[in-house]
Length: 121
Image 1 (tube, one colour):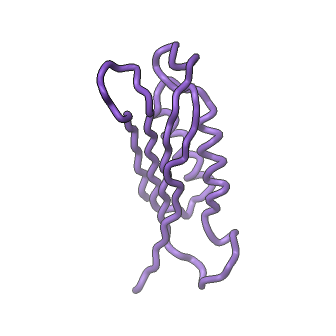
Image 2: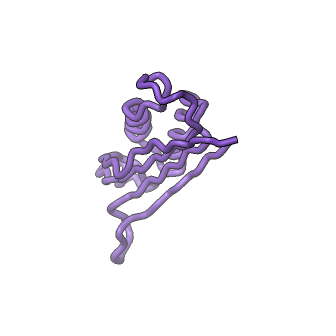
């Protein structure tokens, strides 16, 4: 049986937030880049209804709300985001999130740190 899959994603969403293990990170804040990729089967016959797909505007709202909640670990942010997406869009078979912290409190030239989670049904 043939199957048609689709991917709906937000890439390179930039946030200024206050995540970090060290107290100064939670005071000064940092820049983060977030990518969220969802995959699912196509369940409609090509109709033009937003209710028959994963709304990326709502996806952005979920990511934004999670990024606004200060946390020590990016893993906690990623886990919370995936949990909410799973709950709101139960037809998503795969959800991947990556969060990059752009300015690290480390000595040395480092482009960014990365935390990435992938959920699959």
